[in-house]
Length: 452
Image (cartoon, rainbow, N blue to C red; front, side):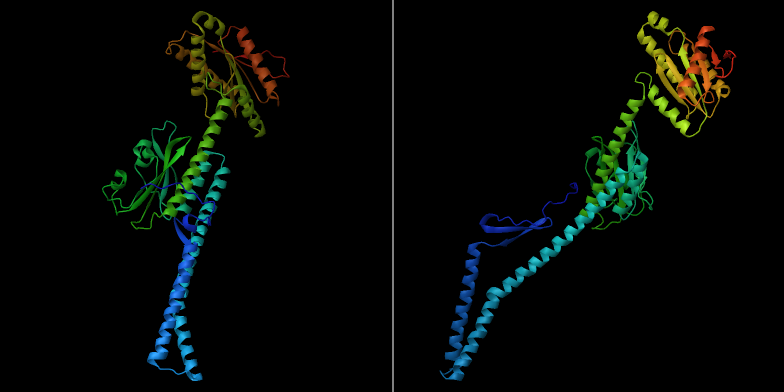
């Protein structure tokens, strides 16, 4: 069963004359015609005249043939009374009763139109609230929380939102109707769901019918009805709202499905916007070759650490003799070396640590919560992982030199970077493939060589 997306007529009551003078009035999904043509008016007059003529003839018959009324004053009064009574009956039958019937039909039509209009206004108000709530959600998690509340308000029973993962190969329950238990659909992939595969809403009157979804039939228990509404995100159906209810003719009426489809459209649109924004932000913050943060993004992360009064160690790392490697083996090998070292950096640091490509073959590692001495084990682990990796990644052997400082050196990031860069230059001068801790700005000691 297919259902169209919810829409509200822009004109609830039209009065444009059609063929033969008919005026059509909106009546929900149907139209009733009020005929205002000249021929109908003439026919109405003819019926009234015929009725009055028949009433007059019957009055004459009753006056002359039945009651034998004389021309006296009493006889004329009785004859007049008979004519008036018969004329009144004729007018009631030929005019008053049809008019009353038409008015009754019009009152019913107006009442039905008003009820339908109020229903659609309520639908619009609900969808507007959903839209406003989704517009205020800043993350995909926030949007999914709104989806749970919206499903709870749109449906009387259990409902869940199944969302494809990043690979679009698996479906997971991302949200369920607030305050109710999830129906527990067992579909595992987007294309395993008939509603997603067909790209349209599907309703199932009974779970034990032959035409029901196989995953609905396999659940066992008492029979139930269900509806599945696919959600399109960035042009592709990659999610579905699945709801179950009792076996009853009015469980999934047109208004309920309209409301649920409206929720699905709103959720799909917002998730698409949030994902597009996330992708755009990620592209703006990352280095395209290595996938690490770029310099500007690193500086923004460090600025946030400063605002939180979080101390940090900052190390600068530079691949040794990188130009010689590029010249001897080609730029493609040089790019593979950069990507390999970037992978080692990501695997060696903690989740909260910040790793960025500072430019060329130079990298920055920011370790929140540590000072320069406490950062040494992590930095040495990076160097050790590099030694092991270059022998296994079909890359020529290369090493890395590092200089490390921390946030106690200066409140300015530029000063901390300069201190770690000076320590890096010291490591290069002393033979490369080593880690040097920068000297404090106020001291006269040389940087500490902690090469191992």
